[in-house]
Length: 322
Image (cartoon, rainbow, N blue to C red; front, top):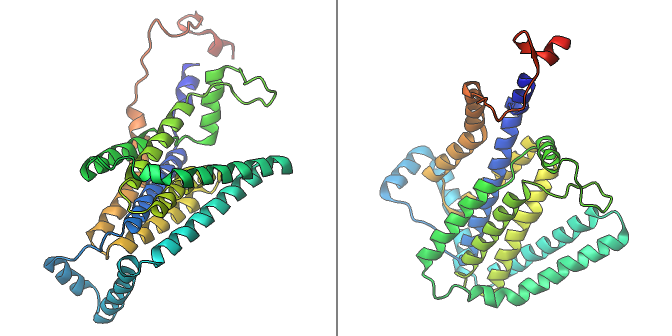
């Protein structure tokens, strides 16, 4: 009996890798959001130091260097030189975000009336966010930029730490054991309480607050509206979609490609990509494998607080009867 209870909490290698995939997805969404914020803020491209230029010339051929420099100048002109390109791009992305949110909530409802009601709610929240954009932009004007960035970094770390990375099977098992069969009473069978709901709320609220802090550093109300729409798309819509899909490895690969492209739009290939690749490998592969390996060293403490088991001749009664 004790062996069965211990095996319940043993994480298999495939389960650990899937949890690592979910953590990598959350990290990629955060990287894409930060890259999008840098584009909206219009920060200039970082310049290469002489040593980095020498290393780049040693790696790439002259033809590739010419192509990269040309693409870099064009993208820099798009960000810094054209005042009308960014608002147009922002409004297109915001419109796509709203349409995607409406499509998501419409397909999640079984009835046409429910889809229409949820679509109206999305439009209502969008108009409310558009009206509150000036308030969000002026919310932290008196706070220094360093303080805003430090607070935003801490909130983003909190978002990653308390997010829900549990598997669907484990999540239902934990929730059912926590509720002990108690539902919300409306006939749907949904558990009334969930020990995971608190962490999910803290994770989402901390990231939204981090987005509000970063939005206060932007220069226009349209940029604030687009940044908050991007936050809703990445941390609400995309997070829920990726969590419900079964092929997590393919979804993780798409997240990694998207985050890598976002980083490539901000900086040329430097040591930043090596750090990013190392972080993805460490979080997605090394840490799950290390966790599975360290499970062998886990010891279960037994004491008078455990449930009593009848014994016959020094052995468990249930094991003898079976």
